[in-house]
Figure (cartoon, rainbow, N blue to C red):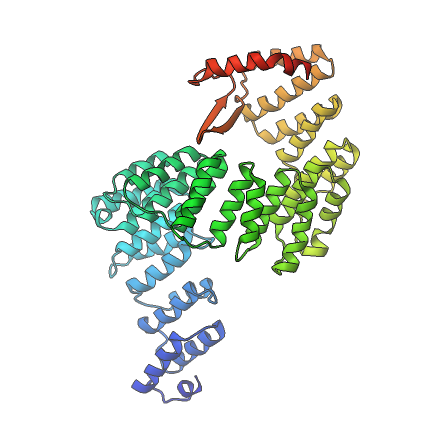
Length: 503
């Protein structure tokens, strides 16, 4: 670097080549600033090609600085297409996707540069990250009108991802169906969109149809399919995917392994979750969180706490907030009150993690289940953030179990304040309060509330449950009589009814 800085007032060909060599191998911002100083000394600080090298490092390298890339951009009199695309790409994947649109707007105003395929791909990615479906639709129309989308798979994928990311899954499917030969990436984007919208059955249908179309899934696709199996409780299909991974020798990486652990745990097959977890060649914090969550779900609190210790010793991993939440959930399900309180009180000191709302909510639930309401209310009062619906919902649920009418009324009052006029949420809270009145033999208050329901025309969303039978997921909604096997189900219930009443 000193060879360049101590050169003459004009960069020689040798010095220029040396500068380019150093720019390609730049690994820190300190080195980059030295390269920039060399340009400034030799009067090349406005050279677009040289600055594009510096901007690319700042914007795209994990050791770079995106804000510094923007400062460098401001020094360029005539930015080229590469520079615009670099900044739009970098900001589209950042926490500030709106700035990608800012540079796209500057580009459109620049008469010397026109957007091309890569530009639209990055802009659509920014729209998806920011959930700007209106602007995304305008870009979609633009690429349709210009015919760019027909020949560019990346733009096709970006449009599907845009609609899926904005929960416009019907638009995502329509766009997907217009692609002549979707590749494995596009299938995965569609499946992820279904899973994101809690449409696990549709995601698995897409996964199956992918085989019909002759497209073999990769590691990303099987991970998405396993997530859908976990959502819908589709154990048989999850086992089939596991066998497929073995048969096709797909890479058993940390993502596939974690998805398998999560699927087996959520489908009630804990021993298989443990088997997969123990056989993983490499595990990360998400893997441990999935295993701890599985133990918590099945009421094995001791094993969950043991995993917290193991991950630090065996894999030298520091637990994050998700892992600690899993342990707290395990303590809640098992009634380990002192262990849960101790963990919450020592999260900052032991693990350097400030408790978030969900951690407080979990411990409030733990205390309420044990009817330790004074301590629960004291904890709510000392929360550093405003208690939300999950906190007061935990209080309300415990009141039904212990028939605490006074506290239930307080919880409902707080929940109604939080709902901001949401009739559905208010109705759900009032239905719980009605049931608490009835269980506490306060029929008059229950009748008064029910009259309020009628007068305000309030309806509680019907309850829903799902079960897999012979590899097919069956969904049941309260009051629904459309299931094809309803007569057989009712006949079995009638046979079981005497035993249920005795129990």
